[in-house]
Amino acid sequence: MSRIRSKDTKPEMLVRRFLHKNGFRYRLHVKTLPGKPDIVLPKYKTVIFIHGCFWHGHEGCKYYVVPKTRTEWWLNKIGGNIANDNSANAILQDAGWNIITIWECELKKSLLEETLKNLLKSLHNAPQ
Image (tube, rainbow, N blue to C red; front, side, top):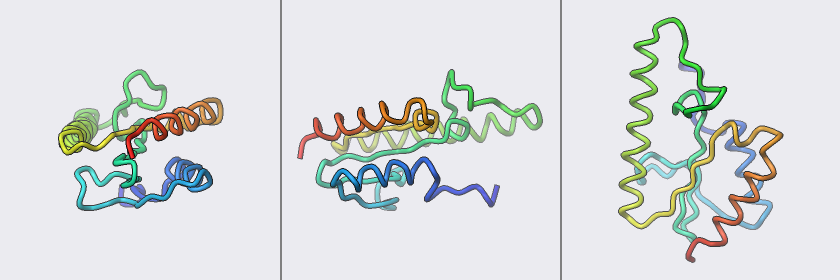
């Protein structure tokens, strides 16, 4: 697991390139915010989390399959990630931040264009 990246993943880089190309400027992995969001847009008071379907337990997704070995350990690990996500989201919402969560499966070729279009809409609707 030491080789699993938490920063600069392919899905994250796709979103970052798209935002930059569309004129948005952002900060990365701000340690002072709960959950250390992948992308922070201070001007829009918005944070973006880009979740891997497996690591964050995306229900109903074909990429979230619990391994057959060490099942209990994996369920505890993924359950802990989900609990941490919920806690960070609650704290950020209470602080007035808009939260956008993008799942890894939403950035696959078939859904990519629609997902990025929806991201733009939600950012333009965010208060500045």
